[in-house]
Image (cartoon, rainbow, N blue to C red; front, side):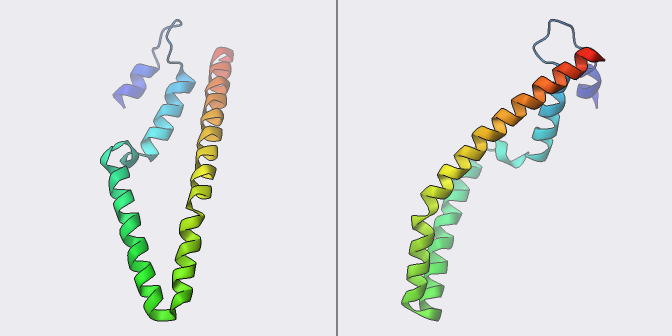
Length: 109
């Protein structure tokens, strides 16, 4: 509450406009866990362990088709990574457009 009230009294020459601060509030409030640096390492370890366990269970349930299914998942992982990087770049551009729109509306008010 205090940070929001302080943001209402920004000077004209400030780099942080009201629209930019509102966007920062909106994005940071919804993603508190992603700011932890160890989260990526834990996610990687969990993903590897999950793949191993799923491959083992699929192999015991349906035989070699389980290994083929896991191979397809692993082979398509780089494509998914590339698509996620593309979405990240587009999200950044969208955020910049929202900041520009916020600055424009703030000037009108």
